[in-house]
Amino acid sequence: MTADVTPVQLRWEHGCFLLRLMIAILSDIHANLVAMEAVLADAAKFPVTHYFCLGDIIGYGPDPVGCLDLVRELEMVCVHGNHEAWLRRLPMEEEFPAGREEMIQFPLQLAFDELSATQRNWLEKIPLQRTVQSMEFVHGSLFQPEEFYYIDCAEEAERHFSCQQSSVRFHGHTHVPGIWREEANTVGGYEMPETPFLLDLPGRYAINVGSVGQPRDADPRASYMLYDSTKSILHLRRVEYAISHAQKRFAEAGLPEFNSTRLKTGC
Ligand code: ZN
Image 1 (tube, rainbow, N blue to C red):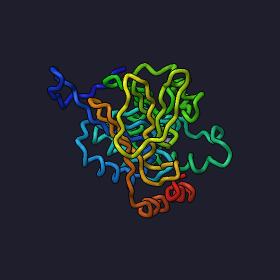
Image 2: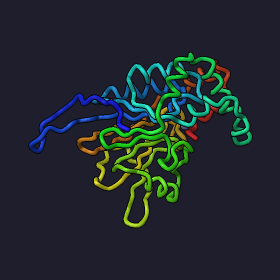
Image 3: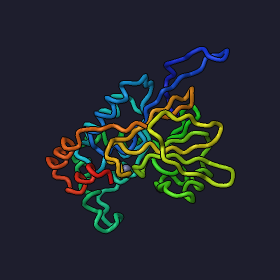
Image 4: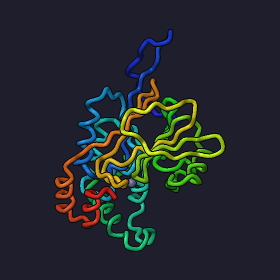
């Protein structure tokens, strides 16, 4: 599947015109509008041509409508997350691990109640995966993407790479930024530096952009990624935001305390 991204920048280089895409990739916003606004303010400092959103716009947080409005306003190219999938199947307590029902189901119900039918339909129509300019986008693993497997070990990364068609693939889901690279007989998992990073193409990479609204790598700063597809340069951005202001919003919405306190620890 190819999304309808409009080429907006062409430049002459090496004897031909090259399409230049500087993309900003956000994932796992989780209805944290305060974090999302800080990320978009940071992205505005760069010549971003297109925005992508890798799922879980909703869930856990208090502002599903505000976050979805921004996603649509910026015409982000979106894929489906597991929280969007769960929204369609409420109520479904029996599928959550014991003790997690409230932290997941309560905010999903809040999203269901606050989003209009039109907005819920829009979320429902988001595809599970997309390919744009030879880059692939999905929420979790490309291995049975509807199952939303985490890529959190070499075995899962290998299963994922067996389904990856392109050199560069972006995902989220674990809320931990990082990079998997296919190597001679195995795959290697690496932390991402916060300085711009040149991909060694045509090697194959699966890149986790981290989470805007609920990072889980013990760093509470919001996470997203910039990628210059002409130069194959990745740039992980970590953005400080007003966590106490976000926590006030969680409290006002009556969300479970754990959803709010974890913002401060990034776990
Ligand atoms: Zn998520």
